[in-house]
Image (cartoon, rainbow, N blue to C red; front, side, top):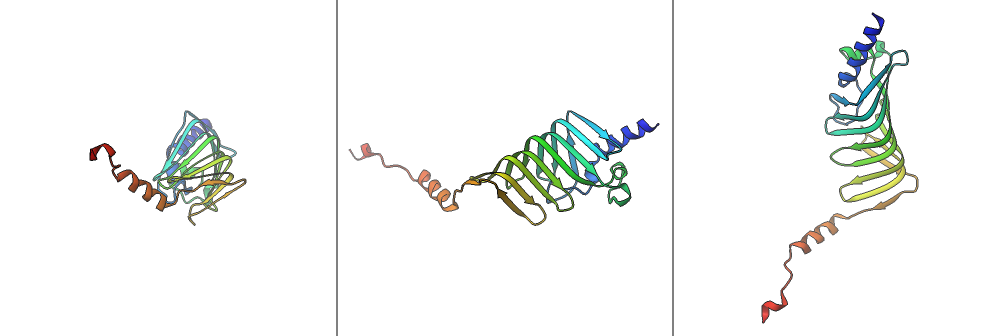
Length: 184
C-alpha cells in the first residue's frame, strides 16, 4: 500500500505540477512537464525528470537533460489536488543543455536553477542570451522574473544591434538599385 501511494503521489506531482506555485513564466498558470522518465524520492521530497525534459508554463519553456524538482512541506502548501500532498515546488535544478525560452529572450547554459522564494532563474556555465538581434555571452545569467530584471556576469561579450541600424538596413533593402544599362 505504501508503494502504491508513493507512485500515485509521484505521478500526481509530475502530472499536476501546475498546481504548485513555482514559476517558469512571469505569467504563472499550469506547468506542463514531459520527460522520458521520472523518479520520485518521497523521503527527500524530490521528483527527478530524466532525459528530454520539456517544461512549459504560459509562453515560457525550459528544456534540459535532467531536472530535479524539490518540494516544501505539504502543511505549508498553497497547492490543491495531488500536488498538494507533496507541497509547493521550492526549487528546480536543470542540468545538461539547458534552454530557457520566452517571447522576449532565448537563453542557454550548462546548469539552471530556479528558486521559488526569490522567483529567480540562474543559468551558469557557457551562457548565451539572445534578445531580438542582440547576443550576449557570459558565465552567469540571473533573471529575476517578478522584477523583470536580467543580469549577466563573467567575461561578458555582447553584440548589440541598434533599432536605427535595423531600420536603415530595411530601407536600403527596399530601395531599388538603379540599372546603368536602362539609360542606353
